[in-house]
Length: 349
Image 1 (spheres, rainbow, N blue to C red):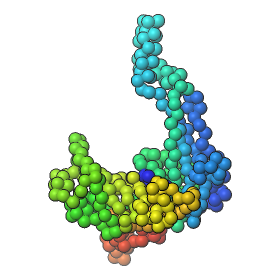
Image 2 (cartoon, one colour; image 1 turned 120 degrees about the vertical axis):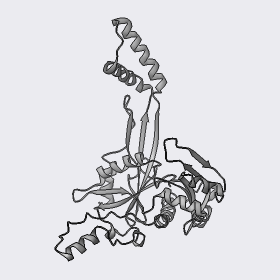
Image 3 (spheres, rainbow, N blue to C red; image 1 turned 90 degrees about the vertical axis):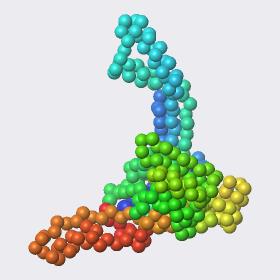
Image 4 (cartoon, rainbow, N blue to C red; image 1 turned 45 degrees about the vertical axis):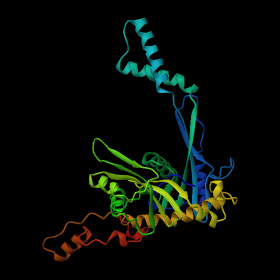
């Protein structure tokens, strides 16, 4: 279902009905790029059938799919054509265009070449978990995921509060936690460390060390961390059921359901996890596993980072007010790890 994913927490959403969601998505369907259009995106049926609905619900889990098409002219071709145009103008007028005029020439060249550019399409799966109050976006970068989230907010927000999403943040930065796990050679409860890792020096040189299919319980890894390198990627397996690569940005990459999950669900593991039961079975299996993985991962990273409200101004002559202000400012905060990951009552904007 997902190869890569970023997870957003629902801070607010007055959920419309499935029929309403489908009608809203229908206002922004995917349409291929026009002759001179560099990019186009819109919603397509997540089931893959041309005339199916634009939203699907499986066991209360909502699934959408966005298709994006881009057209780009090779930079080398543009450069050659621009130079030819500038040479031509210089020969005719005696002056070589510069600055704004040269930019206009380049834009005209790109516009003329765009109809001959080959389009490239990509699809992004979106899973809305109303029970867990999170949204999974099947993207490997924050930039791409944020573009999808912006689209969702535009279409699915309502006049009575709208949709508000924020990237999940944990008390421990992933890089800090991964460094501790590697140095101590001890994975968090329920997880195991696999054989892929990337360590990077957080300075201008960005010195990088990568381990691929290599045991990581060696002193050399700890020495790199002691020298200041931080893990930016680390391969993990949860409960022997799901493997993935955790990044410093809390992105999950190379997500894979393992054989024990697929065979237990009656799936042919040799057939790349495809279930003969079709779309519903695939969604049910994947969401069932990932809904358990996410709280375990958040707990391993110290729990959700909960923003606290600004402390009210304290009256120096009022001890009770001063005590209340100190409490609100976090003088005696509740441990984030002790808060249930999706306890909306504990989340404060």
